[in-house]
Amino acid sequence: MPSSDRRASASLLERFGADESLIGDLIEQQRAGRSRLWVWRQLAGALLGAVVRDIVDHPVRLAFALLLAFVLRYVALALWTTFEPRIDLAIGGVVGDVIPLSRVLSVIVVGCANAILITPVWFAIGFVVGRSSRSASLLFVGVALAIMMPHVARQLGPAIAFERFRWLLPVQLVLFGTWIGSFALSTLAGAVCALRDGHELA
Image 1 (cartoon, rainbow, N blue to C red):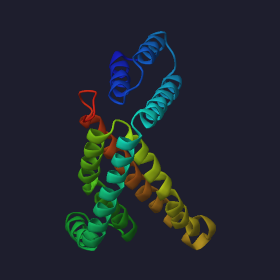
Image 2 (cartoon, rainbow, N blue to C red):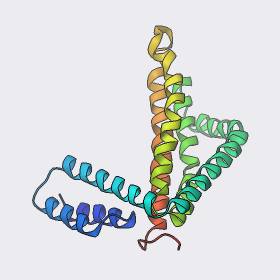
Image 3 (tube, rainbow, N blue to C red):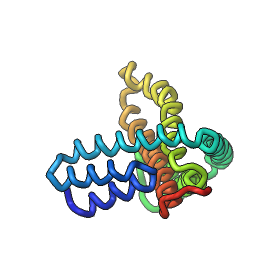
């Protein structure tokens, strides 16, 4: 594994409070030529261990940070839903003026642009939560994705079950993938930036 990847994984583990001896062992194993899959499994295990330790050591701080994260998410989505139709029309108008697209492609472009436009909000939430608790952002993203999955499954259901809606499946997969990916990556990027010095707020 390249040295830049080793530095990145070590930095990530340090910021989320993984044990220093474990980080050293992981770096040694990477240098010894372990596969990327093995490294990512160990990285996930180390992050999980850091989250468990944080839950045990700082339960009140973690609970407050999680509550804050979900309140901010609820407010952000409520505000976004209010203005989303206008945003969609504006995006659709701009895209339609520049490139003539089919209805399906227009829906994909507008939906993906929508998901990208809200990423600064997720980044800000990740940053605020990261400053409050070291591992709350990891838990927040995990729980939020678990909450989203039944909704995603319900939306995909008709396209999977009925032939006449089958054409919708790739469209939905692209839109859900963009929304979920942008949410998770932006939130975690905000948390990583908040933990730049390796410490959350005292």
